[in-house]
Length: 295
Image 1 (cartoon, rainbow, N blue to C red):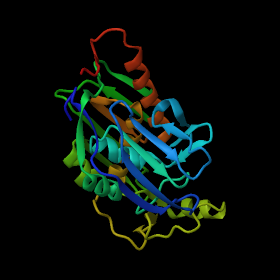
Image 2 (cartoon, rainbow, N blue to C red):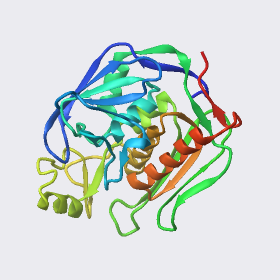
Image 3 (cartoon, one colour):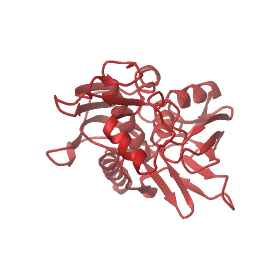
Image 4 (tube, rainbow, N blue to C red):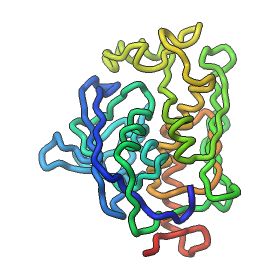
């Protein structure tokens, strides 16, 4: 990913349909081309007057196990896999028309989004993409879970996720790291699926949530590993956490150049970091680490 590249949009509309994990409601997303400086905007076409919400940390709502955006009646849930696909494939400007409030769960990964967006093609625009180059080390979190950001060589975003569920947990421990590029995203991150323990799954369904979801719809772990499913990668759970992190960082609305290392972080901590980075970019008074668009 090059710093200061030209912005993009998709060439043709595309569609992704499925059911929300939490609600079980069917929903179709229609991705439409948009002009430069539009960013990513979710439009609730199922609601009167079609309210919309910009996909930035300004509209992020703290939630467990997922990322929610809200602006008045325009509320969209589980946006992290959509945002990861757009960021990973360097698609900057798009309207996402939604027939419901929760994004399709699909197989728990970003692969279907990546395939649809790749098929839609990509068109360069005349404006430059805004970029924040990390020039100092910082950290959010505590001793139990944390994320650090620091400078790196080159013009890439590097992500490392350290998964640690303990040695006695079937999900276990793993570390996955990658330089974010279109190829790396498509082949190494996008296919990594959501995972959960059997106990957690049972607790959610007892609360009336995700009642339609089965062990074939995502990775459900019991003491012997995933039930009725096979891992796509030995470190698939760590890769999925890296995917989630990327989707949450996409809410900065800018390209990031630096190294991000996360230990046991989730959406809330990821979101805190994204808010911090977006604030840093827009509060920077000089051009020292801020590369703004140019005609």
